[in-house]
Length: 353
Image 1: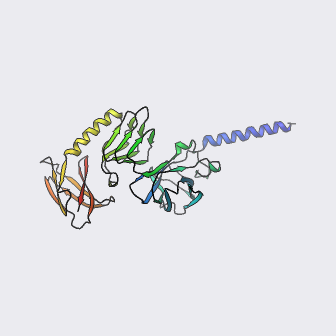
Image 2: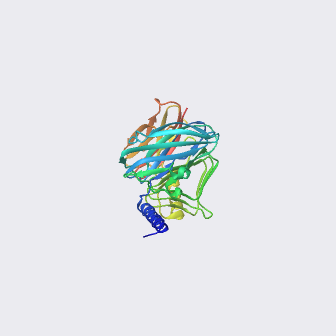
Image 3: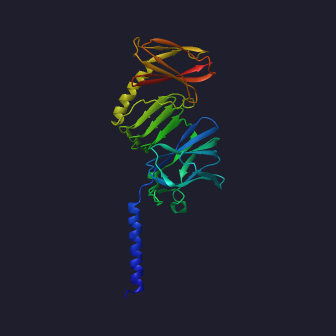
């Protein structure tokens, strides 16, 4: 007959094997990313929480912490397929709140990479706060995904599966070091003077399927350690970060590292300096768009966007050297004129007085 100690030892071994095998076969959780934001003034801000590798998920639990002295939670909009989602803002201390996001149903859900899980709306006042996923409280249960069988999915190490973010006033200098923009993620970086990426042994990497935009009024510097994989996109724009709308602009893609990036940036900057002009600028009503090349492409698309990024005008030009546009039905303000010719695109700012 086996002794009591032998039985306990066997029981412990069986438990260990069960736990280890279960961990080995558990599926990896989705990659969850909180959006970052740079704001120029107080007001409402919408922060998307996006996911990648979200396959056959039956339940979600997230805990996102932030500083309520910088901004306060207002409301949420869930993904249309997650209508039973519940979101609560919970007071912890005067400088710390947690947002609890909970969803679960019998029928699992699958989303494409980059899909929005939920959009959180805040009232921003001033200052800087991180949006941090807490995957340690409650033994990790506050941040957890379950698969189609209801089993917890692997989400450690935390930094691999939960991407924190920052909400802040647009800084003068924005230094981007040791940052990876993963497949399905989209990031925006702004500065009123200079954006610097990588350098001094640091890295800034965009993986295939990832996208980033950099907007600065004066300089954008890409130092050694800046890489964009094939299928990844890096958008760089010299513009007022407080006025620039969210207009898609594929400036360049590259997998050749800094040297190739630099060549493409110089090429694109030459294009931006010489493709077309708009005048008068500012204007009271009408403005002319005139191509520098007197024989422009046969088909050129011109789009005009408002300050919020809404498209207010579209015109297809067929080999026209010059064309007049009117903003007579539009209010006074800042607009952006975008010209698309083949695989080339350029955007300039115009002001209606």
